[in-house]
Image 1 (cartoon, rainbow, N blue to C red):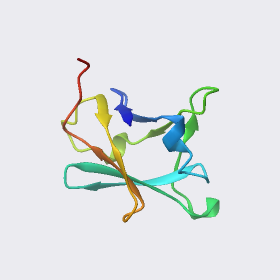
Image 2: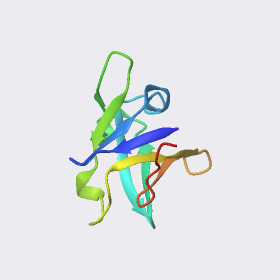
Image 3: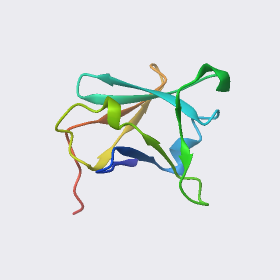
Image 4: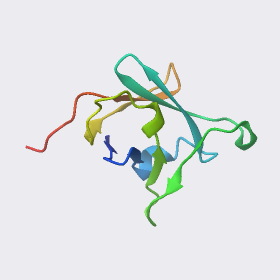
Length: 98
């Protein structure tokens, strides 16, 4: 699944993956060279807001404050880790279209 980190520090999440975040909020963690996005189980528990981007259901969330310096904007291939309950997004490897 393709995700994008924008030059303004937003993470764009496709609708298919955004469905994992039922409360519309998530937490963001940096683990090694990955950004982990984990759903919050209860709306009152806080977290970052997943904003609705379009009628298709794509979402975006501001992750700029979590990103280490030097993370380039661009598309990434990310995976859902069932064991960790986290969306794992590489920070430093941007994909390019062939």
